Amino acid sequence: MMQNAQTMVEAPVLTVRCRRGFEIESDLGRLEAFVLRDRPVPLSCHPGWLSVLRRGLRHETYCLEAVDDRGTTRGILPLAHVSSLLFGRFLVSLPYLNYGGVVADDEAAAMQLIDRAVKLADDLGVRYLELRQQDPVEHPKLSHQMATKAHMRLELPQTSEALWKQLSAKVRNQVRKGQKSGLTVTWGRHEALRAFHKVFSRNMRDLGTPSYGRKLFAGILEQFADRAELCVVIADGVPVAGALLLHGWGVTEVPSASCLRQYNHTCANMLMYWQLLERAIERKQEVFDFGRSSRDSNTYRFKEQWGALPAPATWQYYLRQGTVGDMRPEHPRYQRLVRIWQRLPLAVTRLIGPSIVRGIP
Image (tube, rainbow, N blue to C red; front, side, top):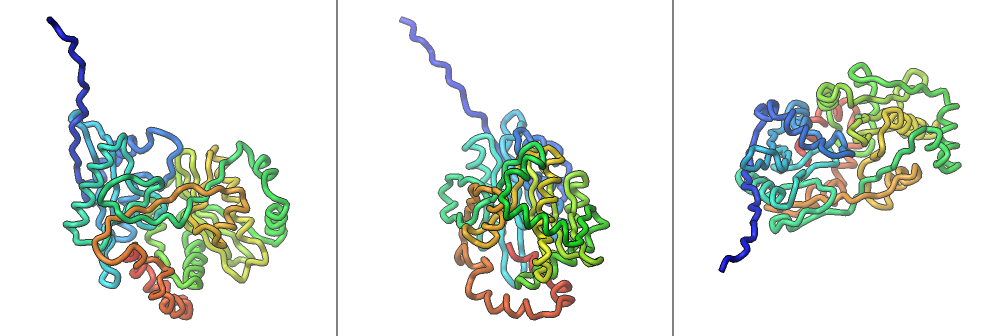
């Protein structure tokens, strides 16, 4: 008597490749194609950031790639080894950016990529592995997480006129005040970098935080020549507000923006953000990502007034030493250092800030 045979479909055999530093350059085309299969995709998810971080912050970079037995990419995990004598060593996906972590076709690929990242963290002897996920990935080694912040995102209409009608009367009045304050809004790339960084570095000093150097932003503009640009607001010949704008595939995001406090009365910041939103609409983008903010903070409420809504931001950790909160700016041990930094001469903070902040995950 013959029995019906049940056809079994075997799962593909996966292997994880580990590329390092310059080796990643030759793979960028293939890795980009994998990441861009679906929309929307923020520019922060592009594998080219590994080149930016290696050149701009001198990080040792890695890209883990899960491939099946046919050589097809099934998942990637970009990583940067953040190392300094002052703070220690960390393995992060990815520093500076709000996005990172695993991009994979399925759970099997994600699990193998994280397994390999955990091994790399052990081999490098880092304090922890940090994956800046949007949604958490279940893995036994990722035993800690931080979800106190949220991505603030605004779905964009097709025209700036439609967006204007969506805004509250208070926001429209503040934008109008900025338009009537004698401010000039300029756009540029490398030629605008000096003015942008002048505002950015001063604002970071005032907040008590070391500032990234111009080299990082120059690297971003070079790597993403057609997708990264700078907006600078000028008052009486002086730059008073500035933002870095990144145009992804369906998503525009603003990872760095600053406004000098003494010009708050001009509503320069409100005018600038209106210009940023208009720029995204001009490029037919679907979403504007204002970046991460702690819930109910001042920055959260600033973004919320434009109509932005919170989306998940779950950072997951494989912890080897210390605690997850050890390196957070709000940790009590850093409050005295913050106050000291705020009193330092601006020239000093611009000189030594980049070498300090590159070691902070």
